[in-house]
Image (tube, rainbow, N blue to C red):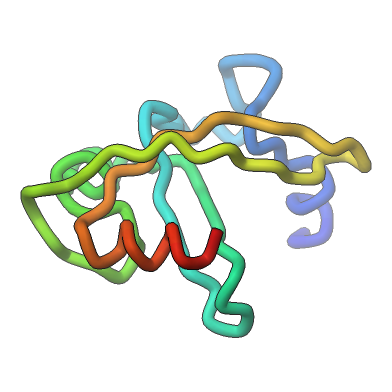
Length: 107
């Protein structure tokens, strides 16, 4: 099942109603720093749980950071492969000062 999900997943779905029935909130993304490679980051859209908790909007968008307030908005060019095609998107992320510096250092 996981292989099937990977092959059919779209970061920016063409249609607005995903087959899974899970509503994604695409105003801001959630960021994950990849520990095995310091120069890469992972991104995902905010889930309902993230929206309710304020993650990515009033709480730092780094998955493991809990900083609140004084967040800075970044628009990050994101290039990814999907269905053997290279795609690009401009993604908004709100990060605290520490995570913002870390993201910029990995760019």
